[in-house]
Amino acid sequence: MIVVMKPEATQDQIEHVRDHISALGLQPQVIVGQHQTVIAAIGEERPGLVETLEPAPGVEKVLPIMAPYKRASSELKKERTVVRARSLEIGGKAIGVIAGPCSVESEEQIVSLAIKLKALGATGLRGGAYKPRTSPYSFQGHKVEGLKMLATARAETGLAIVTEVMAPEHVPVVAEYADVLQIGARNMQNYQLLTAVGDSGKPAFLKRGMSATMDEFLLAAEYILDRGNDQVILCERGVRTFEEHTRFTLPLASVPYLQAKSHLPVVVDPSHGTGKAPLVPPMARAAIAAGADGLMVEVHDDPEHAMSDGAQTITPEAFARMMAECRRVAEAVDRTF
Ligand code: PEP
Ligand code: MN
Image (cartoon, rainbow, N blue to C red; front, side, top):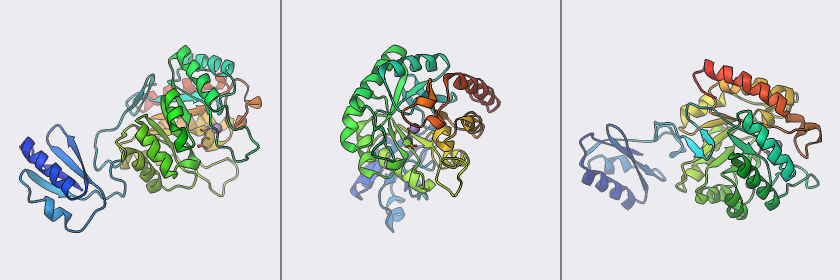
């Protein structure tokens, strides 16, 4: 429910409505706009609610929030959310680029690569320390040691660290080293993890589950927002279909769709989205043309010998070319790089 206050509503009237919403067992969220204040009433919608709120002094009208997700909805918040973490800004005019290897392999690897990526225009550094692998026999990541390696790379470059957290009990340690907590596709509906990341107060990078609908994706974001953490980045990373020519199918229509339904910034991951290195730069360009607020791209000095996801990983040289091409597309759609 959104309670729209009259432009001339007094502070007392606003507080009265806020307290009334609390007394009804709903959570009030006061949003002060340029012309008028709106108060969102978040919680289970019940019949008769509009009637109880509408007569209060200073109230102009009461509107239902139609979307099942409330805090994530653009019905509630008109201005776009900008997520900021050190060097990284996603959701503003500038397009953020988070680049790095699939897995953090060694300190030498991540530091030297971070230096190159920063020089080529990356604004965030990715790298998995805790890796969700399909097989238990595959490399599972260097865990805390990997987090320390990422922190060293940040100290050398100033790049914000984006890295995955797989379990609620790991949130404190990952939050100690990372700037942005990534929730992977396989964990998009791990509600305890979403809640723990929400409580951490750190920006979250939420990847779409490989078979999640848009509503499920935005409801997953809602779990983080509902903990009072408004720093959430949505990432389209492709979904599973009958197609076999790519690892996943990358639906770029989700970019404008999500941006219409939500105020949260949207990033595209063409690496997992295609699974094939030659397809990554063209899909990165297409993502920017579609209006994406950022990219997440896997880069490695020697993709052939990468410990994970080598087939979809591009070299720093290919990344440099991709950045130059993306810069031109960004200009064409009135964004900066
Ligand atoms: C990753 O970013 O390395 C990753 C595992 O991604 P996803 O969760 O999208 O598969
Ligand atoms: Mn990967």
